Image 1 (cartoon, rainbow, N blue to C red):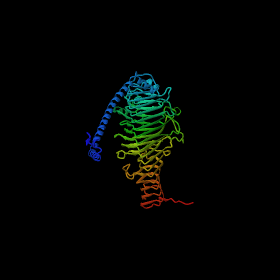
Image 2: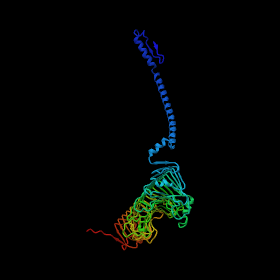
Image 3: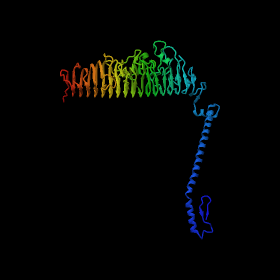
Length: 573
């Protein structure tokens, strides 16, 4: 039989097909069976060769495509930069009123202008900023000369319609002893409808957002994210000087004396060695400060949130307001306040309301001042206070101060206001110290705390506490907020109400305690007490000067002094 050349498969010859058909087909089948194992290897090799060839072709295509894309991108970029090219004209027509300017040459003035990698070291470009409505600065450097007043004005015919955006820009200033104004250390933005700062850096300079002459209406917004503010050693030294001397000038990093809605997110304020505020929100309409870090110097305030009631010119003077019943909320969330090692008597947030130039609030006017909220904030350092409050409502939730300090820190310091504001200071799930520095007997401010671990301090024993209530609180029973076990140690007067609380010992020698469902190791030192459903470790009444009214009182040791203990009887009608 004959065989195929390639795979050696036998097949019958034509002359033998009829005579030996059966045997020849059997031999052919056997030859196929003998050689069929060699066929897959051959086919597999061909498939592998084809796959390798395809992969190599794909790699070559990618290589040549990338090279072509690079060449194309460079060519397009060159054409866009060429103002005489059709590509440049097409981009301009597509953008409409936008002009992309890469240098400081003043050309035509559009309604919108974009500055890229520009440097301003003498003054702002006058014509563009006075007439453009929408300004964008990307990667620009602003170097303000010493003593030069820089103002970006959104007034004139637009009057509060202009907007400005700064992205990845650097601002720097230079010191000059030029009297007590803000021209040395701040850039002024006046009557702007919107301001946005993203990932900018400020060195020895700050910004002032105002609406000069406007007192009653909302002006615009100010949005700041990812920015960093720093002071050099020279600037820090000058700042600590005498505020009445020639070195005095406004050195706040950010100040908002007019009605703007503000948002400050993920910013860092390095106020080491300075006694000036980092963030001054004293007359803004509302503000949210989130995820920021504040480094605070000696006797300094990190953030001011104040309401000012001005009596000059009928209560409409300058940037302040006399609008009655003003309620503005400022919220701090997830912020850190860190005092420098030498800092003492410093404040993280000052929430205050005060009057000046002869303004007096009418009795019972119901003014409320600002509402300041702090959520998940932390304070580290020595001798600091997270909040200083006077005639302003403050709400704190899940806030804590550093216990491991030689000079104790305070959660809130309560100041005696002068305007009889209907204010509320409320603490929830907090740990720290409440301190009363001064307090008027007629104060309308209420103090409430819930589910907190507290240590109370009365700095001035001449004050009279009122409107003070604690619920489900522990007064340093385990030393978590102070070294001493006392809940309160003072000769101040007044009344404190507790519900479902626990304390080790308490002294308010001229005060009265009303306790409901509380547990105490000893009664403590009080002028008088009212106890309902309470448990005392010791029933010793020797330190209670007045009477103790009780209902359902349980105790472990001691003898009831019937001369002081008066049972409360309920009578069914």
